[in-house]
Amino acid sequence: MQGIKNLTNGPIKRQLFHLALPIMGTSFIQMAYNLIDMAWIGRLGSESVAAIGAVGILVWISTSLALLNKVGAEVSVAQSIGARNMEDARLFSSHNVTISLLLSLVWGAGLYLLARPVVGFYRLDAPITAEAVRFLRIIILGFPFVFLSFSFTGIHNAAGRSRVPFFVNGIGLALNILLDPLFIFVFGWGTSGAACATCLSQGVVCCLFVYHLRCRSHLLGGFPFLIRLQSHYTRRIFRLGLPVALLNALFAFINFIMGRTASLRGGHIGLMTLTAGGQMESLAWNTSQGFSTALSAFTAQNYAAGRKDRVWGAYRATLAMTSVFGLFCTFLFWRYGGEIFSLIVPDPAAYTSGRIFLRIDSYSMLFMMLEITMQGIFYGVGRTLPPAIISISFNLIRIPLAILLSATALGVTGVWWAISLTSMAKGIAAFVWFRLLRGKIMQES
Image (tube, rainbow, N blue to C red; front, side, top):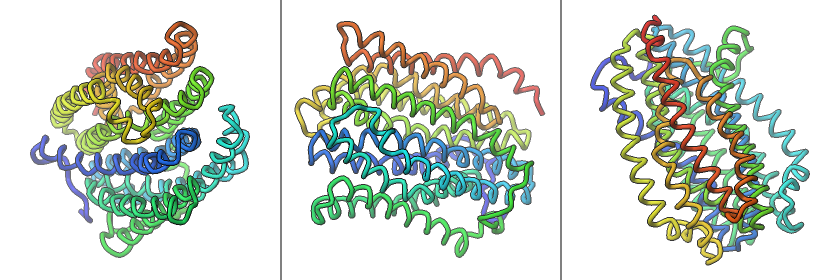
């Protein structure tokens, strides 16, 4: 089937595991770009970490928009494959790539022009703000590569070929690891050097995807990267991907507001703790997201093929795996949070604050895994709206709760408690909603 892995037959757990592992690795690699930048820049001081931390939330908003086409591809292409409609699979692939390029250019141009007032929202010291603006404007130049790579990743995941994005992104990460110390310290470019290393690495990743699709795999029998958009396919992609993109972008924007609250209550150490701590939390989130994405692709193919017994088997297996991982993360963050944080920012004031953040955050890990699993099953059956509603609602509650708690004796730790408590609520709400809908989904053809 033109390079496609059929997920509608064979052992469920083995297929899920083989599909999830490369996706987990890819998610970890994509997250590791910012984490590695932060680790190297941590050697320059907490002020520089605060500068790229402020930009990190803006980059998060941007990559959230790129999810529109990653999720759009994973569901639309996988369901077309499950229904044995290869022509639709190719057309959905072409539309996702075209839309992602257009989005990257429009969004990148707007953010480049508004970089200074957006970064100024944090009310950081003038030198930190200037450093953040320089870093952001360089990072923006790589947005087309990032958006396109997200689309290519979604297409490969939908076809069951998750190993390709893993290896391609792994090469990019290895290049970034080599270039960071060279540009930051040897060339003396500081935070701008980290941004240049990231952009160059992301460009290489995108070129490798193009080479693989054009010269090696001919996935789906080959498809054009740029196409004149047709309303039927465009609407379907936006209907599937837009709720996911918006909820992630809103989540990032809420963290943008939370960052300002942390900055007002705890200065640049408060902002640095939130952003660096969030990167460490994303180790758990992005790793387990591999299981969610694998469940989504597996569910989409089997749901479209009418194999609902395999859908529920995959759901139960994924829930068991993510629960074990959640318990492990809880123990790791609760017991060794300070030691983990010190690897990124070796400043006593910074990792003391980071230890408190990760310990409070550890209480929500198991609930986060529950939310992620429910997200995967919802996406696979084409219902991307319920996870969006849950995430948006509780993430919005996070802002007034953080302001309220941080105004008490808790101080800046009130912000950390607001994050942890709302994460618990999201996991519970997603599980309850899915259980209520399960009967209806079973009756659908």
